[in-house]
Length: 250
Image 1 (tube, helix red, strand yellow):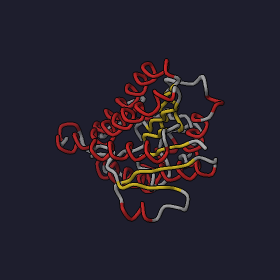
Image 2 (tube, rainbow, N blue to C red; image 1 turned 180 degrees about the horizontal axis):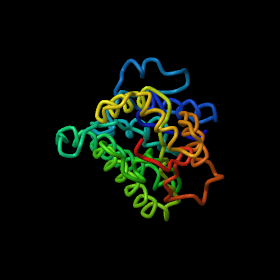
Image 3 (tube, rainbow, N blue to C red; image 1 turned 90 degrees about the vertical axis):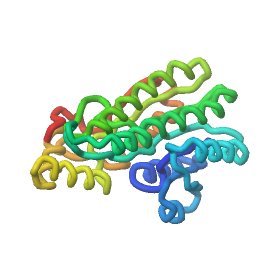
Image 4 (tube, rainbow, N blue to C red; image 1 turned 30 degrees about the horizontal axis):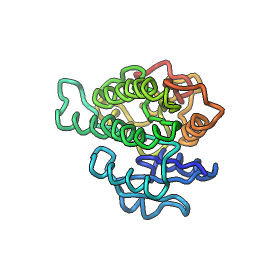
C-alpha cells in the first residue's frame, strides 16, 4: 500500500486531498496546526500537530514516518496561508516574513526531509501546492505571490536534483477555489479596493474562460493523477487548475 503525507491536510484543500488519497487506497498521514481539526479527521487518516514551517517538528514527524511506515511514496507540500492584503507601500515586514515562512519555508522543509526518505528507495513523488498567483502577479497580495512563485522555482530545482533518483516533482496551481479561505481573501480584497465582496467574487469568476470558481475536488483529482504511474513522465511542471484565468484583476 502506497504512503502519502499531506501538510496542512486536516482542513480545506488539504483535507479533500487526504480523503481522495485514502479513497484511492493510500495510507494517509496529515499535519496541521489546528488540534481540533486533527481530532476530527475521518477514520483511516492519521494526523500530527505540526507546524510545517518549523524544522524541529518536521524532523520529528519524518523520523516517526520512517519508523512506522519505513518510507514515503508521495509528499503533498500543501501548507500555506493567504498572508496580508495591502498595497506595497503599506506592507508590514513581519507579515511578509510570516507569509513566506509558511508558504515557502514549509515547502522546502517538507521536500528536504521527504528527499531523505525517497532517495534511498529510488522512487517517489513530490507535489507542491502553488497558485495561479505563482504564474502571474496579483494586486495587493505581494507576499503570497512572491512565496508561490518561489514554490514553483523550488519545485523545478527539486525535479532536476531528484529526477536521477527516480523522484518526480510538480506543482499544482489552483485558481480561486470555493471554500473558507477564498471567502477571507475576497473580503480582504474587497476592503482594500473599496468594492463589495460579491463584486470581487463575480470578478474572479468572470475572469476565467469557464466563468466559475474551482472546487477542492478539482485540485485533489490532479494530485491523484500526478501521484499515479500514469504521470510517470510528468515532472518539473506547474499545472493550473483554474478554468483558464485570463483576467487577474477583478
